[in-house]
Figure (cartoon, helix red, strand yellow):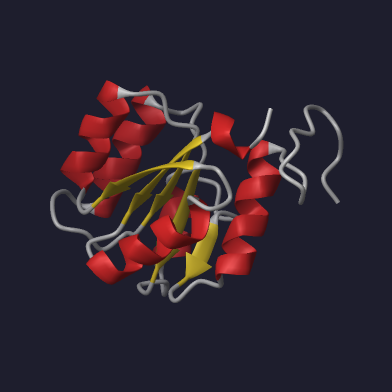
Length: 137
């Protein structure tokens, strides 16, 4: 399995950020779905198989905790990374609700660090080969 077997959803209300994600991940072979608000995220989740979500917290639509409550209830098997410029206090909010806080990136996020996390979560090595149960290191 390689990157083309994975579909990533990127949600950010800033068009320039969405364009950067598309230009950065499509050449690696990923299928990329772009959303500008929480409602679109939920719509896409209901329409197609997604392997990983990269979400901004400050988007039009619903409150950030409302979106994550729905994701945890209905889509808990799909890993989600958070990229946000609103970082202060957010980790504590998520920890209090029982969410994994290792998946937070401060905006602007390093694309290299974001890619590294995505590859590790999806168990893809640097050459794009699927690692399965092997250690990522």
